[in-house]
Length: 205
Length: 215
Image (cartoon, rainbow over all chains, first blue to last red; front, side):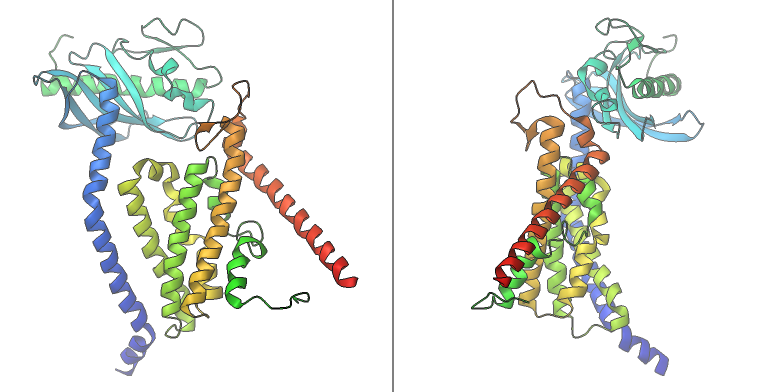
């Protein structure tokens, strides 16, 4: 009994403060959580509508799984891009893979028949400033918009304005350029297969 | 120590000035080096980090000062950390809610304010021994010193790495940006040069002082 009394004597301030601070945090969390969630949704929507500008709305249409290059399954959200009249005009996914310095997270968009890539946008990356982080710039990104949704190749030289399965690498950032191409090449066939199984896109494409 | 003062500066004034120069947390005490090096690639994140630290420092100094007579010596660090962690979490949530872009730029460095030596150092050195008013002044002075140091470092790095300050271009278009200044190497070099500059100024003013006194 005297031991319990001793512990209480020593730690009552800690207990009282923990309770008080806990309540404070619970309050802050309750007040700001809706806003934080909304911010996340807004950001994703903004990224996706930059890829499919014609879309008015994005609808979560399920979760798919992408096996990473090492075979680790990673869940990915599938978003349906809806035009003003409610027609589906494309799909968006988030996917990720290893970059030069850190994980690169991408949002990837394809058209409704899964024939062409509508584009990609970087959700988060930590590539070298001035070199690898140029994967975010139009020079590189525009090469994906309209490219066929099949295997892509990375070329060191070529015409970046020509839209085909050949992606021209960024000078001084071959590894980052390759990383993005690898992420896309790894994700697309798996997504296509799973979407066919779900009946979202027609067979025989 | 203070020989040339007719009317000795009050303890309040002394505390207020300590953080700005004499005991500047970044340049004199070399505390809080992690955010100093990590978030000073541009002025905006540096200022946000500075203000976040001011808020946490102020709140933790007030709380610690209020409970200074109740603290058990062997549990004090635990109490400091608990207090600091609470306010840092509040700042983190606030940034995520109202400045989501800035929150992303700062990334893990906001939660890392918990282990920022300046805050726990001031709780130990000042707030746990002094009444509330002095603790508040101390927090504001140290916080301001930290914020200003960060902004100085960040301005130099941002100008050299992008030719802009506060994302507004000030250097001519012909300026070739130094990408290295945006990377960690730029932070170390700039900090080292600034520390050398501060030391030179201190040494100069000290020798002036001794000359004056000897006359």
